[in-house]
Image 1 (tube, rainbow, N blue to C red):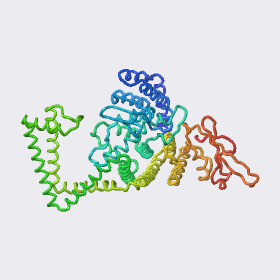
Image 2 (image 1 turned 135 degrees about the vertical axis):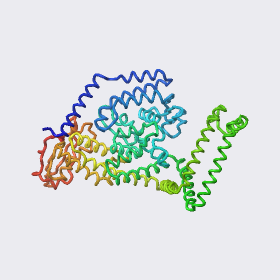
Image 3 (image 1 turned 30 degrees about the vertical axis):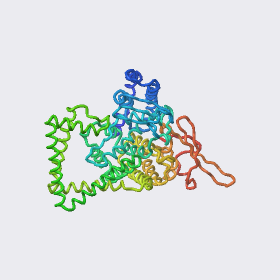
Image 4 (image 1 turned 180 degrees about the horizontal axis):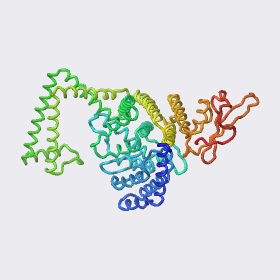
Length: 548
């Protein structure tokens, strides 16, 4: 009788075949769809041309992109998101040349995205334009205000990572190869952390989070619950704290004005905590603020109900406002003041709540939590880069612990194969501008242990052949799976080569790796002196497949 997981695999394979068959019969003409949208736009011809080119390259590269990364959006969703954004979010797109007079508006940057004006100005580079389209389509905040400073900083971290991620199929894939040039990535750290999150909680969840248009659902809370459900409370707490912390440091690194605002907030929170130490003084302060707000509400009521007072207020406000923010009518002013009145009433309700003992205690804890994060802002600029590097490394070590748990839960061939692709992808992620994850010395030990664990599980599930009974030798022969850029790693073949060095009277061993096109790369086998030929399961000088 077939085992349950075997039946599940068979159903998945059948479903994939049906999907591929359906795609052949039902293929949308996205090019034609985009051209219809462009007909209604006043873009220059070079803009229309580059948009059509972007769409074509996304279609061409998608198959390889999905094969390499596994858990990605559908091709339909990827392309339709671009068309929707062009149609609904971009009234103006302007391409400029570097150092030209036209580029002065974007200063030393490569693009300018103005969401309110629905305008994009960027260099005439396809990946830059696609990044701008991704950016203009998203909310500035995807975490509600209950999380205080984190709602802004973590929103920015995730949004930037998501935008970089959406450019990836165009940037790194060309229809026949997978190549990542770190200098073409807007931020290595943002990208690395976002890819960590994708691998931990899945593309479906992250995609819904970054494209969420309302604050009805608390995705931050859902994110924490997912992490805890998959990896346990301890790892969840550790990862969330690290994400919150690094988001603040990244924010003040890339936005100097934010640091000034947060430092002011830090002082206000500090003052409020000091006042709360004296309960009597705190009650007096709240009572005074309530009295002040009550008088302001009274003034608003009198102004709204008196035409002359409303006209005076209209003139007074417009005198102080810049042209683009002028109030156009008394009716609009009346509506604005009604909204102000509602906000003031809400504030009075909150102040009344603070007078209750339980609320007083919880509010104090809330302020202490705010202060904990605001203290991070007051960092010496010379130490900022080093601090970000420290946190980035810690996040990778937590990620590896989480991935270790994914291996434990894996119990089928299909899941194992997907896991192998994901871990290979992680290994090849740029850690900085000089090296990938698999080349980072500070992660070598953790990555090696995880690689050995994956290989052991893959052997048990009959996904990968075992080439040696010696674990270290087997690791040296098979780690090539996770350190190459072949699109389909199941096509990889290896050859174990033995060469006699007459002068030294010794034998040296090499492993030659062949991609799907038969092109081989030869490397000397490390620790070859420990190799026991009797323990080998492969013959010398013969190409063999790695996957069963």
